[in-house]
Length: 435
Ligand SMILES: C[S@@+](CC[C@H](N)C(=O)[O-])C[C@H]1O[C@@H](n2cnc3c(N)ncnc32)[C@H](O)[C@@H]1O
Image: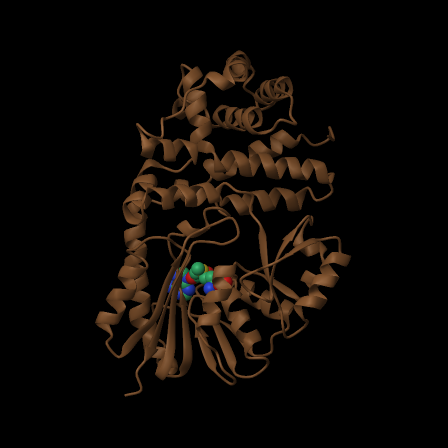
């Protein structure tokens, strides 16, 4: 490892940004990896592995530390708490890091960050866990099944309880387990610019490992690349990073030539771009979002994917737009949600989301739906979707919508649960009767 930059200090920086400053984990990690692009691949892989792994397993790390430390984790200084968490992660999950190195580096980092007075404490906790790793106890799955789920898969108790109540214990267990599996990059071929065969050949030539997506013939999973920006195929717009469940949601909309589509909450533009690509240069997709920053993200994707039949517009979905009344063949309402289906890619969601926020989000979704359904033409479609797994935001909202707006008929509704290759996702497709 290079000694000009201390990789563990960068990992600590990421953990502090996420746990203290409430930064999103993928943004904090990406920020550091982008800034230190010049580091050797091995160092960057270490930063990614330890920061992602520690953040995914915070509850388990705290449970272990609390067994050996008189000062409980929630009473520790945040720097010390996070040094211990990342140190214990290395002890438990990284055989390639010798225990002695994990302990020594944790102590050195505490000193470097101005906590020399606590070096004995850090040393004591780390060495105690290292010596007794196999003797630490964990909740018994038979006696305390919910506590077991919470600690084993690092999910808060309320979420273990709620998911078990809503969908059953085994579904909860499998979903939580899938959140901890290494995440994959799922991509969709831009069929307006290339074919899956040609894209695959180009990616292989760029040194990427490619696995075909068995559920979508233009989808693939990519492994073994450094950053997407470093791939010419990405910069040339030949593929878009998109989860399988999102691709299947767009397939449901049955877009046809010359359709006018309004996507009311569109940034960064994944579903809109997919729609525009399916229109093969015809029709128009209007991709709207709340802020100029979000609109710029959409515009970047329009440029990169070279889509002439898509435009980005700044528009609050809660404010009725008189010019759009009954104009759209398809309205996409992929609304802000609790995001429980994407915890595998964004682990901080499981620590931040609260039941009361989920209630607020379910109410916000109803408010947005009650405005944007007006944009659908008679005979047109409304596609409601979320990337969450929560009956209140999903089936209950779909049921509420059908009851409140009887001119819409529910054609199909699907909840997918997360697995290693797919997010948890919900779609409900409605048709506006031709009356
Ligand atoms: C789930 S994301 C959309 C993802 C997008 N459909 C895609 O596939 O790439 C929800 C989006 O809703 C936007 N949003 C939240 N409140 C909004 C509002 N009142 N009006 C418009 N957009 C809003 C957020 O900025 C966010 O970009």
